[in-house]
Length: 183
Image 1 (spheres, rainbow, N blue to C red):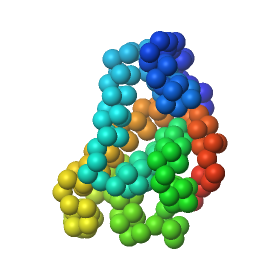
Image 2: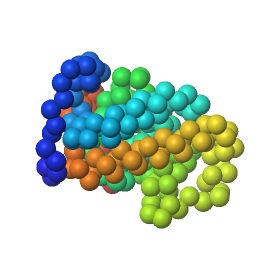
Image 3: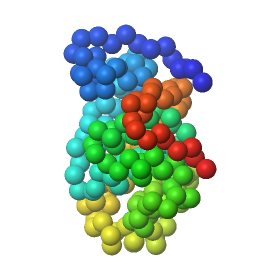
Image 4: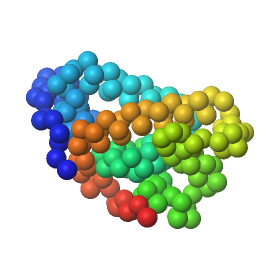
């Protein structure tokens, strides 16, 4: 699949900060920069989501990657894997997120979070009272609300990227453990 909109030219401070952070300008920003208010709002929301701290970073990363695997957003899987390495998260687990149901590396809580991510992503959502109650008991209300917000943001990002034809940009190539294929 090719980009469905051409890359917009981004220069100056925005491009420099992205290159400093990622080594390149991310393609989602290049694609959405045709409408800078949309691109900036999405980027700002991503920064705000990343700054939330009521829930464990691994759980949030696994949730985002579970959404990306379900929606089919190779870019989000790619960049989340890269960020997992940079944030010293468990790379063996991160590599297994696309096949989390078949993998034996995850804890019951991690499985519940990824199930919740998929249930929120389904159309219509299929979140159950039982799953929510397990997560509330394990995480507490602030962390459950945060995980829910992270998953909602992941749906915004993955669905936008997929609709615009944005695919993997090669971030995970710098990582030690390759992403597992979804089973």
